[in-house]
Length: 170
Length: 102
Image (cartoon, rainbow over all chains, first blue to last red; front, side):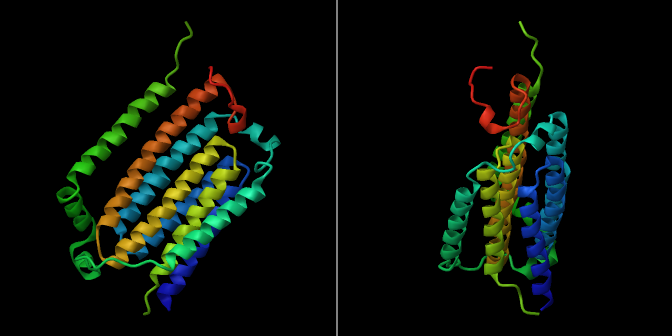
């Protein structure tokens, strides 16, 4: 009973907060709601025995990405947004498309067939600690994707500097 | 202590993803669209972690790790593009960015 209660709390909070994020008119409010949303998603990760990824979620999303968003919002002029329409004019039709997609996903979930169980049981992860197990898997089986992800992070860093640098008009 | 069914997690992930899709389709502010993309990625992450936990396999968690890294890269490039576009035309509304020439 207690796990379900916790899950329902996190699920309701996540859904309500993501709706708030999408519908707020003021971008700063939206980003602040997103901070709360990411902390709740981190709590859900803790619930799934993934404490290292919960820490990563809080550090990277709530710490880095959110600050980047906030920085750019404050850099731009958000006052113009207040005079504009909230959504685009035909938002009902697009909401219908999204609802149809949700229905399709829900129908597809009924026919899900799980693969055979892997060897990383919950007891094993709890005994070895999650960070150690994830690191072992990451650096043994997924070394090459890990290097590629390093490159994927390095190239946008240069790209962001090149794009955002102020060019003098010739 | 009855465990939470896997379907609940998958439905939660699907709902968060769909809210992201809805925001992406209906909001025309470019930062709001980037935020919606982040919401979609988070919905997928919830599903991946739940499947990984219930199938007792670490591959889903490695994938979540990579998705978070890619999300950071995507946001960095998107916001840099936003700054570069804002310098030429001071608007954050997508429909007003209708010329290719700077």
